[in-house]
Length: 396
Image 1 (cartoon, helix red, strand yellow):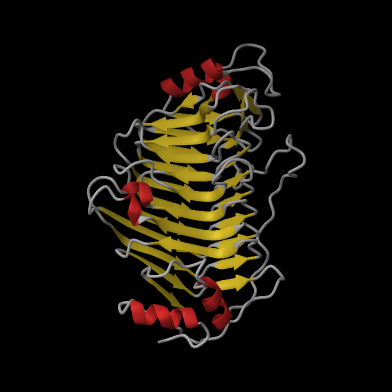
Image 2 (cartoon, rainbow, N blue to C red; image 1 turned 60 degrees about the horizontal axis):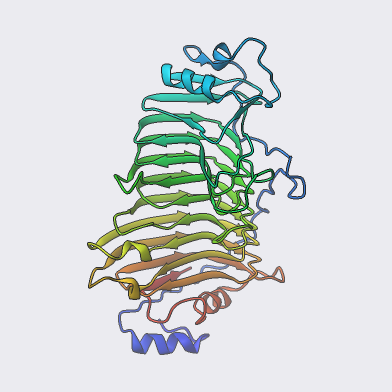
């Protein structure tokens, strides 16, 4: 139906016959509770966030206690670098448990091979020794399969970094790997991103990745970046305060090249807050340049508060090398976009083979007023918020 509240939509209806807009009038959603605030003080860069689900108080049966590999007289205050000792133990043992005190590692980080379970006791922390290196992975999973990380607590060196350039220091890096589970990760203060999913030198994409209850805050660039994955289940993550290096996203789904993939991605109940760029960004354009690509992304129940833009999706057909297309679905179900200083939504998808579907959106403007459905529709489809001619459906 044509929206009588927005003349711009009437123009769009005439010029793009295939455009469909459905408005189901069932009444506005109630105001939800406030998003949980981060547990660290932004002015105190030495503060430590509280790990989610870190309830493990004893080394599980059958798991190797990493303190058995530390040198005699080891310290428990995170001031001595134990990288080589810990790496040797992880390489040798299939199931290991970090102790309930801080462990310091250097910028070589720790590499997790295939068929490993890595546990972190309550009170454990993996600290990065300050470095000038712009590129690091504190925990790295590369060309590996069947890896489980339970409750890792990782603190980068952003507050004490020895250099000024670069943006590629990652808390957890997953590269060209499969069957990976990351449960209850808390990652903060990394020079780049808290969690990074990508390929290793352009090789195979990540497959079958599950990340549950991640708590990501104060990492400089993005709290989490995904450049290539086929099969990602992202459950109840929190991502806040990306404020230093563009694009400053809570979650950034952005391929590096046309050989990457953004397929079979489901994000459930994400909370994004205070990001200077975007709560969630989907940037498709670098998938152009090769063969036709398919994509499928579903985001359920995003709650964004005070990010500049809650959600951005973009696909620029001028980036094509020829006639290649990107086709598929981007579905956003029941988002709550609140107090966004620029706009709740930027829909800049000129590729009509990507269909954007938004259901039951709630918008609170910068004055703290929850908009009516008619006002939400007008806001989301305003000409600087939704690209003219894009293929989208909005329902209530």
